[in-house]
Image (tube, rainbow over all chains, first blue to last red; front, side, top):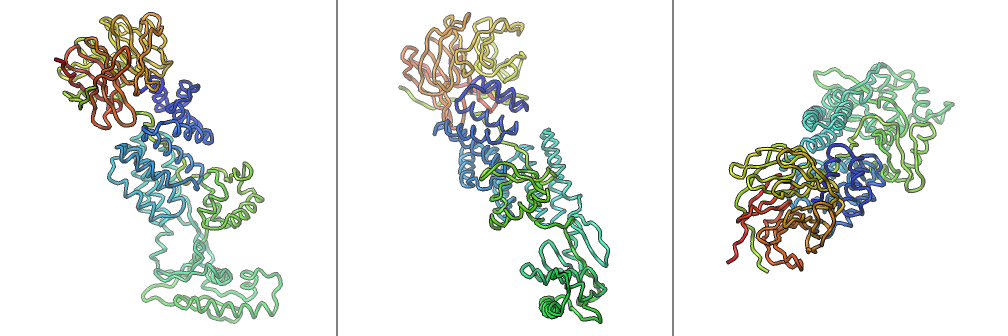
Length: 410
Length: 212
């Protein structure tokens, strides 16, 4: 390889992007463009990095397929970190195949990890897992091992399998130490915080306490009747009554569950579930209808019985077990919590990427974002299609750039 | 043009702490190779590193009988082989796009990688005396018995080729197995050519075909 390119690549590897830029700043041949792109990415100028990598990919001749594929992988990683989920996934798949067929297994694995992270972010957990399985046979560098374990942990957390998540994070931490990259170790540590910070609130018999993810997981096997505000459902073990499409019924169930074992007055139910200011006879009639509907829905799990002043929830007896009613709520309850959950990774998102990730329309997301912006919970920058939304950074999904290993060592 | 598969006689390395080999030369006893921040002397008999000099070493390496020449960034360093001291530097003709380096007939011969050129350079001043065009990316250059050989790497394939120093025409070509890289080339003066293995971090000895 060329002298100055070697010198610049060594500087990059040693964590000195400015030193690398010094050496190739004025050159426009393909390897120089690629090196400049990676240096700019490491310096945080992702837009510039993207342009440079794209020109580098073009400048590498058709015979330099591997070098070209590495540029594509680097560009895909930048797209992922800037939450540009519309970036063509098939381009990445093609680059990955090229790298694998030319024996560059390390970078092929890296491409696979980027693909898995993208799928994880889109909530396609099975596909993400399948992608990881494909990479399984490759011996990985410690840094790649960290990336892999973070994806495994991410999948486990979203599947509420905290033991698996902890094990993966443990492996990630030791791989990060082995890699000796402080940024990676910090990323693993911040990912681990997710498991130790309250994931939900448990409300029962008028008391509430924070729950860690592990305890949320335990609820799945508990005998208690759970009113789940995450999924808008009422459940006990295997029996699930989804009320996502019936918000009034869910509101009633929740109010009753929070008061359990006490009953709730008609007035309290009407003001709580119908958001009515003055209770009149028409509300009472509506309450009777809705309670009837709720009763039908909850038949497999509980009864809704009338009391002298209102209604009470009576869960069915389970043999040999105490009856208990729990409400599982978000740690902090606010509107548009799902939008905030994605933004809480601290990265800038476009509203269209959020819509894609949430599986809703862009207009719905836009409305939510505007509402959140009015209460200063999110901020935006840029205009038009380039507009991005973010919250002040908090620990979350891996955001660091690993970039393809030895990009230029051919 | 004669074309055949390269016969790899022996492999040296990988060596501890060596990620990639950027240049190769031979001083009659040891094979020297450049590994980024140092020059290493390998005993070809036992394949062990006998000595090393801490000096920037990013591309081609050459030996003129007393001095080692080593490309670093955009210059060529002249190094006292005995003491390891850098005695002088001259600008490299490719301005940093340089790759292979050889010494012959009082001149330095420098490969310019992507430009697919070999320059003959005055070792005192760095002045380009003439330029030979090659058809491939040049990764290593050597002269032996009046033959000019150079390594190539393009796409995923490497070969070692003998070219006509006047016209650049390829006279003979030894193909390396696919995915095997040649970075740095040097003759041992006899039947062997030493070539660097790029990011495999090794050095190979390839048989130089005899002519009747």
